[in-house]
Image (cartoon, rainbow, N blue to C red; front, side, top):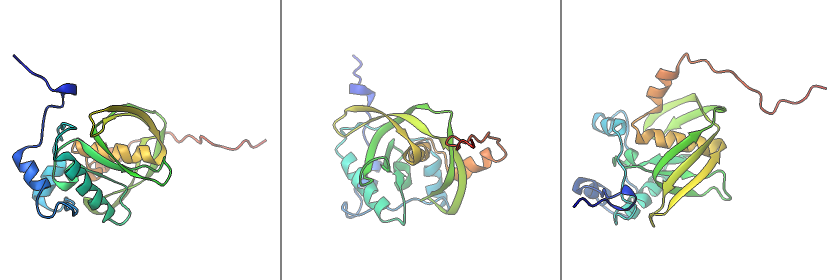
Length: 199
């Protein structure tokens, strides 16, 4: 008889992943992987797998990712591959909420993207001294799970939507340095959404 876990997320952390997450003092930040390190760069380019929201090691990973993000200068989001774990977990600072909280998102998926785009500068915690302009959808529809295995579905827009798109790209092994090379030369039509009436 074939048994499938609830919501399909039966996959738990491997022994190696657990060892990495639980290494050293678990109340400290995990180190952020860098593209200039060959081994770490390979992990950043790898596809991330879904994780069971009820895995007992997951809250430790989330907290150590939160500490890693807090230790940066101005970081607004982080993905699990950036601490060496190829699993679909991201943390995002919610500039669309009061007090701009940092929240976690398990197995996030973008279900819809607006055709209207934003253009803005982006940097990356894993890429030293890289900052370039990118086009991102102004609004997205997002699906994700919490630690109680509850599914959420919400619309996000503005700068927070940009952060989500950047972090979810990490889960597919997409780095902005590579994205920049691919998008160079693409043409977009500029639309003045809030243009004042001249009359």
